Image 1 (cartoon, rainbow, N blue to C red):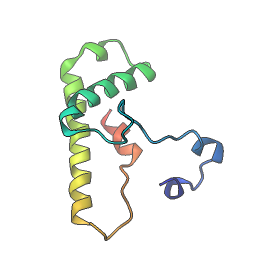
Image 2 (spheres, rainbow, N blue to C red):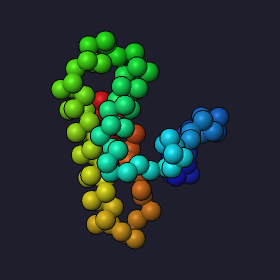
Image 3 (spheres, rainbow, N blue to C red):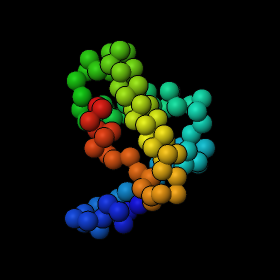
Length: 101
Protein backbone atom coordinates (compact mmCIF):
# COMPACT_ATOMS: atom_id res chain seq x y z
CA UNK A 1 0.00 0.00 0.00
CA UNK A 2 2.74 2.47 0.85
CA UNK A 3 4.35 1.99 -2.55
CA UNK A 4 1.13 3.13 -4.21
CA UNK A 5 0.98 6.44 -2.33
CA UNK A 6 4.74 7.01 -2.06
CA UNK A 7 5.14 9.42 -5.01
CA UNK A 8 6.08 12.83 -3.66
CA UNK A 9 5.89 11.81 0.01
CA UNK A 10 9.01 11.97 2.16
CA UNK A 11 10.21 8.72 3.74
CA UNK A 12 10.07 10.38 7.16
CA UNK A 13 6.33 10.94 6.68
CA UNK A 14 5.72 7.39 5.46
CA UNK A 15 7.46 6.00 8.55
CA UNK A 16 4.72 7.57 10.69
CA UNK A 17 1.93 5.59 9.02
CA UNK A 18 0.68 2.61 10.98
CA UNK A 19 -2.01 0.05 10.24
CA UNK A 20 -4.86 0.71 12.68
CA UNK A 21 -5.28 -1.90 15.38
CA UNK A 22 -8.45 -2.40 17.39
CA UNK A 23 -8.46 -3.15 21.13
CA UNK A 24 -8.32 -6.89 20.59
CA UNK A 25 -5.19 -6.54 18.43
CA UNK A 26 -7.11 -7.19 15.21
CA UNK A 27 -6.83 -5.06 12.05
CA UNK A 28 -10.57 -5.34 11.44
CA UNK A 29 -13.77 -4.99 13.44
CA UNK A 30 -16.96 -6.97 13.61
CA UNK A 31 -20.10 -5.72 11.88
CA UNK A 32 -21.84 -5.38 15.24
CA UNK A 33 -19.14 -2.93 16.43
CA UNK A 34 -19.05 -0.60 13.42
CA UNK A 35 -21.59 2.04 14.54
CA UNK A 36 -20.02 2.60 17.96
CA UNK A 37 -16.48 2.61 16.58
CA UNK A 38 -17.30 5.09 13.84
CA UNK A 39 -19.00 7.37 16.37
CA UNK A 40 -15.90 7.24 18.61
CA UNK A 41 -13.58 8.01 15.69
CA UNK A 42 -15.73 10.96 14.57
CA UNK A 43 -15.42 12.44 18.07
CA UNK A 44 -11.67 11.79 18.08
CA UNK A 45 -11.30 13.48 14.68
CA UNK A 46 -13.23 16.52 15.87
CA UNK A 47 -11.12 16.72 19.03
CA UNK A 48 -7.84 16.50 17.10
CA UNK A 49 -8.95 19.00 14.48
CA UNK A 50 -10.08 21.55 17.09
CA UNK A 51 -13.66 21.47 15.82
CA UNK A 52 -16.18 23.87 17.37
CA UNK A 53 -17.70 22.63 20.64
CA UNK A 54 -21.22 22.38 19.20
CA UNK A 55 -20.13 19.48 16.97
CA UNK A 56 -19.54 17.25 20.01
CA UNK A 57 -23.18 17.45 21.08
CA UNK A 58 -24.90 17.58 17.67
CA UNK A 59 -26.22 14.01 17.42
CA UNK A 60 -27.81 14.63 14.01
CA UNK A 61 -24.51 15.81 12.52
CA UNK A 62 -22.64 12.84 13.96
CA UNK A 63 -25.27 10.47 12.50
CA UNK A 64 -25.02 12.25 9.12
CA UNK A 65 -21.23 11.89 9.05
CA UNK A 66 -21.48 8.29 10.26
CA UNK A 67 -23.94 7.40 7.49
CA UNK A 68 -21.68 9.09 4.95
CA UNK A 69 -18.70 7.03 6.10
CA UNK A 70 -20.72 3.80 6.12
CA UNK A 71 -21.93 4.61 2.61
CA UNK A 72 -18.35 5.14 1.47
CA UNK A 73 -17.31 1.76 2.89
CA UNK A 74 -20.36 0.06 1.39
CA UNK A 75 -19.64 1.56 -2.04
CA UNK A 76 -16.00 0.47 -1.77
CA UNK A 77 -16.88 -3.11 -0.77
CA UNK A 78 -19.39 -3.36 -3.63
CA UNK A 79 -16.77 -2.06 -6.08
CA UNK A 80 -14.18 -4.54 -4.79
CA UNK A 81 -16.61 -7.44 -5.21
CA UNK A 82 -17.43 -6.34 -8.75
CA UNK A 83 -13.72 -6.04 -9.57
CA UNK A 84 -12.46 -9.10 -7.70
CA UNK A 85 -9.08 -10.18 -9.11
CA UNK A 86 -9.24 -7.41 -11.72
CA UNK A 87 -7.27 -4.83 -9.76
CA UNK A 88 -4.78 -4.52 -6.91
CA UNK A 89 -6.48 -1.33 -5.67
CA UNK A 90 -7.93 -1.97 -2.24
CA UNK A 91 -7.71 1.49 -0.75
CA UNK A 92 -10.24 4.13 0.15
CA UNK A 93 -8.78 7.53 -0.63
CA UNK A 94 -8.12 9.69 2.41
CA UNK A 95 -9.58 12.65 0.51
CA UNK A 96 -12.90 10.78 0.20
CA UNK A 97 -13.00 10.34 3.97
CA UNK A 98 -12.12 13.95 4.79
CA UNK A 99 -14.66 15.21 2.25
CA UNK A 100 -17.44 13.59 4.32
CA UNK A 101 -16.26 15.39 7.46
